[in-house]
Image 1 (tube, rainbow, N blue to C red):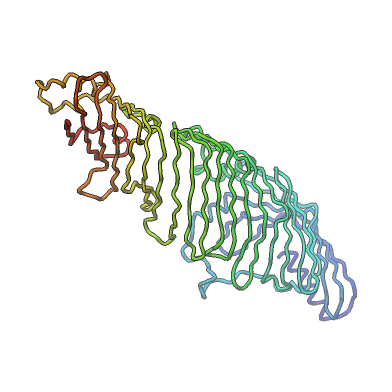
Image 2 (image 1 turned 135 degrees about the vertical axis):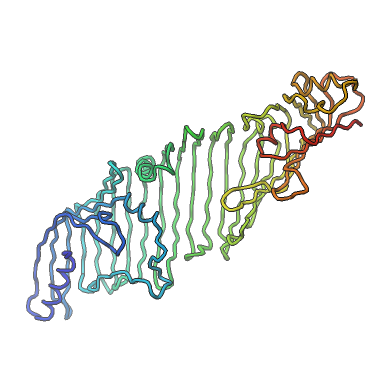
Length: 474
C-alpha cells in the first residue's frame, strides 16, 4: 500500500477525532513497482526509494497536509512502454466509451496544502543505457487553486514547467518556462529503444519548447511551440546527410482539429543519395476545418523545385500535391539513377503532380520540357534503340548507329516528357519526344524521336525501352 494512501487515511481519522493542531509523520520506502492501470507491464514504472515527511494541521475547520518528499527515485523503463504501445489492444479504455474503465484518482486532494519534491531523480532506461534527470517540484494550494513549478535538469536537458490547477485537479494549465534538450543525447536513447526505425541514424542539435497546454471539460487546448535548432541528420547506409535543419512546430487551438497550428521546415544544405540540395523551405498550416495548406521550395538538380500552394483535405483517400520544376539540369536528374545508360545536358521546366495512394507516392499526369531558348545534348548507350527495325540501305543508318551506341551526340532543340498516372490503360507510363540532329550530320531535316515507355521511373530515366519507337523526318 502506498504511503500517500496511508497519509490520507491518517488525515481522515484525525479529522474525525478533532484532537490535535499539528501532527508530524515520517515515512520511507524501498523500490515499489506502480501499476497505474490494469495492463501496464510490471516494472514499467518503479517508485522508490524515497523519504517522506508530512505535517498535518487543523486550520479553517479542516485538516491540511504539508507533504515533502526527498530522495525520491523514479525509474521509467522505455522498452516496456514501447512494447505496450506496439500491442495496441482493441478494447482499451476510451473517454468516448461509456463502458470504459475510469482512471483511478486520489480522492483526498483537498487535504493537501503544500507538496514539495526535492533532491529527487528520474531515470529513463532502455536496454543497458540510461538517462538521469534531477527533479525538483513544489506546489501550493491557495484560494482553491494549485500553483507550482516542476524542474528537470541533466543529460543536456533544462526544463521548467509552471502548473496551475483547480483544487480537484480536473482542470489544469502547464506552461513551459524553459525547455531545452540536447538532441544528440536523447536521440541515442530513442535509437536504442526503437532500433528498427532509427537504425543507422545520427542526430545532433538542440530541441527547444515553449508555450502552454490546458485541459478542462472541453478537452485539451494548446499554444505550444517546438523548435529544432541547427540540427544535423545523417545515415551512411541510406546515403543521407542533411545540415542546418530548423523546424518550428506550433500547436494552437483545440484537439483534435488543432486549427491554427503550423509546421515550418528550413534546411541549409544536404545530400540524399546522389542529389545535392540547399535552401529547403516548407510550410504546412492547419485551416479552420482541419484541412492542410502546404507550400515549399528547394534548390536542387541545378535549378529549383517548388511545391505549389495546395489545400489538402485530411479525409481524402488520394491526396495530391504538385511539384513545379524550374530550370533543372537533365544530367543531374539522370545521375539519380545509377543504371541509366543515357547522358544529357540541358535544362528542363515542368509540372508533376504527386498522388499519395495508401502510404506511397505516385506520379500524376505531368510534363517536363526543355527550357525555351536552350538546346539539349543527349548521348545514348542503347544499341538498336533507333535502328533495330531500320533497313540497312537507309543512307543515314550508320550515323544513327553511332548515335544509339553513344559515339555521336544527338542535339535536341525540342524535348518533352509526358508522365501518365498508373491505371490509364490507353497510355504508356511516359512518352519521350526529341527533335533535333546528330552531331556533324549532313541531314537537311531534323529527326523526331518518339519513345513510349512502359515501366518503372528508372526505366524511363534510362530511356532504355525500345518498344514503340517511331522515327520521322521533317
